Length: 452
Ligand SMILES: [Zn+2]
Image (cartoon, rainbow, N blue to C red; front, side, top):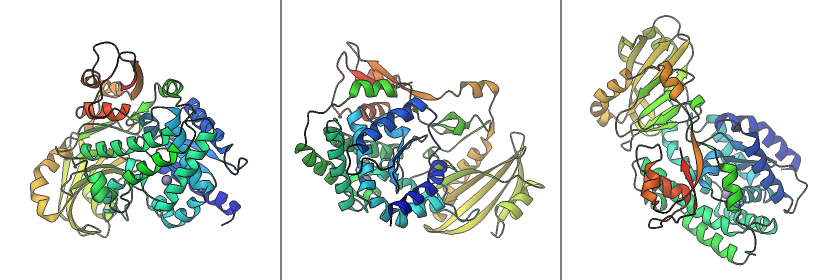
């Protein structure tokens, strides 16, 4: 593939990437900061004049990737996880390495194209039949950054990244420390999803690419041979990420524990205990470790009554049973049952469609057949929890932001973590956010990241 063709490929995919990953993060200063680090690195590659374009994505999911033609992306979730410029430069240098090493073009044709075409969370074929999105959840987050290319390509990108960052004046240790953080983040994500953190290293999550630990080790070895005089750039990095949006963007909907609220749509609902909500660009998923899932998205405007909508618009062509009209907190709704064939085998589906003016909300409750009865009552309760937000609730939906604090005498990890606005796993979140090992303590005068 010629450089020109790669350029064209990247330019064509760029708008789809933006759509898929939450759009451009609306903070010109942050965009300029990341682009500045990227350009400094590009200046020290084999092709310093090559066109590169750096974008911070408005996504909370920790991710970084590159497209052919020099399109490099980092998510704001990744920026929140990094602790210094050297770590960010390591990630960006690694992605630049995939471009200069010409890995992106090969990979693009295989997987990214397929991913973008179908969407990651929204990988839904047809109206109801697309349960394929459910299985992809495990592929999101920190894991996605680590896997994807062949081991040779990953090693080469690490090697190139370490070279670029060293020559550009950053300490290559940042490459190693950040890979360690990604692993911790992936473990935390597993815990939040109700799985064992050891899965990250051992089983399904990394099954096809069980090499995180290898990569951390290899990068450490590579970094050993490099020049360590470079800067970590911690203070200036923390100054730049102060105020960074953390978690969901309220304009795109907010997850708080088991409650999903959307200021723009003006609604909220609750999912049953044991389900973990994940807010994606096309759908909100709630997943249970037993394989059950709830998918929420918006359908086309409903014409006629809601049972009619269910049969002739949403589930057209699918056989539904037990169709029933109902009213949920003043909103017209209809529900029905279907048996679906999915890539996970047969699944039972309860469809629930709710009309709110021109908007149609669609809930798809999916269970393996042997668990349908067990979840039936709580799915009903969940559906009935849908209601309009009050004006006060809408105003109260303020976004979470990163705040840089300086630890005082008497501060402990537990004390500081307690102040974060999460319902669970506060200490684990605080430790991962700050790259603190399990037994590490905080020292007076130490700068730390908080979420407020
Ligand atoms: Zn890579």
